Length: 475
Image 1: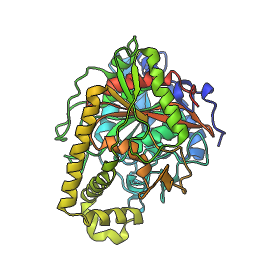
Image 2: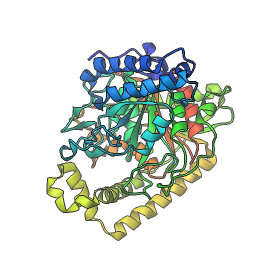
Image 3: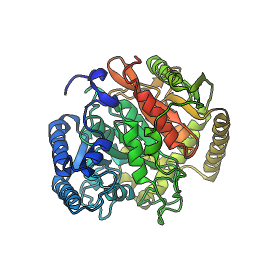
């Protein structure tokens, strides 16, 4: 494993340099690069880097080569190939892809072979992307670090001794290490945003419903979101444009009110008129000093482009327990067909399901009532500010076997409670972006989280672009 990378050597906030998704697609469509040549470059990087990082847990290079060959052939015939033509992508193992084993890191699913693609896979492929493989995740996508009994632990690309976060740690690591240009993962309790922060890439949790989550055992679910990860805000926007759109099978799917997030992010000009409120400790249990300092500096630096930034107070900590209740109920619904066989499930999943089954209607009602209070509190914040800026995580990356027991003055009671800055807004269905903001000792990335009202993804990604322009400036 190489030592931590000097951020000055890492364009766009990435650990590994490489062509952006936009550059790849533009070159392939313009026939200055062949899709097959781009693919072979990335396959070589996977073979070189994945043994040390353990980011990808399933690949099908032959299928990817056939796909690349089909794109090149279509271009020779003068046929359209899509805005992501030739872009290598990976998806979290929590998402199904036909022909690729989907174990979700669980022994009982070690040989499960899905017969259909997730909707996000279909949309990425329809846009011209090439699926390289599946990214490692936590067992059942449940834990806050990417480690499981089937595929082992994913290594943080910045430092071998610490976690890549989770459950989207494999996807974030693959993007950071240059093994793919784009990745997609799931976010239930802040795991996509936390993994992006730990691995120094951009991650987006979209507005609930704008990216359909199919297939799903819970079609009316509004807690789980699927979003892209990339080495730049522009590439995240490009992926988002490909993932948007109504789906007949998804009753909560929504039509985004913008034409192109990529066009909005890449246009000229600054951030004139934007009002940003920086909150250092949304969960009110403390934030590690280096993270608070770096994220505050990064947020206030946006005044260089015309934004108005103010330090603010916003406390959503009274929603932590309510989120735990909603998450437990979500797990029971997700695994409903397996409730009679709890003894055969992993200890963490079994414990979560037992806790969920012990809840009653009043517990759920109380949690929903609290969620409504938090929604109106956040809505009031957005009447004064366009964007909420805050740390993406309360702590720096830690060894997978040594999760933090406390943050600041608060002792943590749940394994993933340190992700509260992400799940407290995620449970409200609003979009959030984690963007690399600076470097903390010992050479680990720090993520700034930008949160906005529903459907503000283009604005958040545009701000993230300006944060990235200063990558490595704040320490």
